[in-house]
Amino acid sequence: MPDEIYDLRGLNCPLPVMKTRRKLLDMPAGSRLWVETSDPLAVIDMPNFCQTEGHQLIETISIVGGHRFHIERGDPI
Image (cartoon, rainbow, N blue to C red):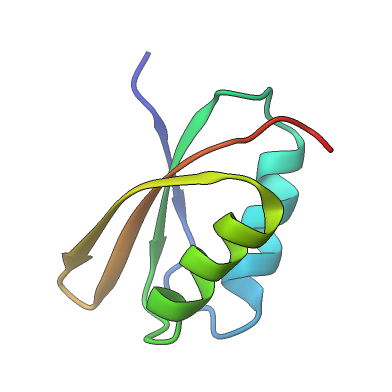
């Protein structure tokens, strides 16, 4: 099954990180998720969120109008 794409385009800081946090809480450790954002600050916020929360940011891709982040859920703390 391909990794899910979570469309958060149109939302501004801090909503993309908050919604990503909530989505990952409902997923088992090791699950992967693509997150699409249009918020220009997400390129700073998402890597910081992943590092702080213990998730792995696998890849960041620039797309038209924003960015796509590939995140692997870390182990629960």
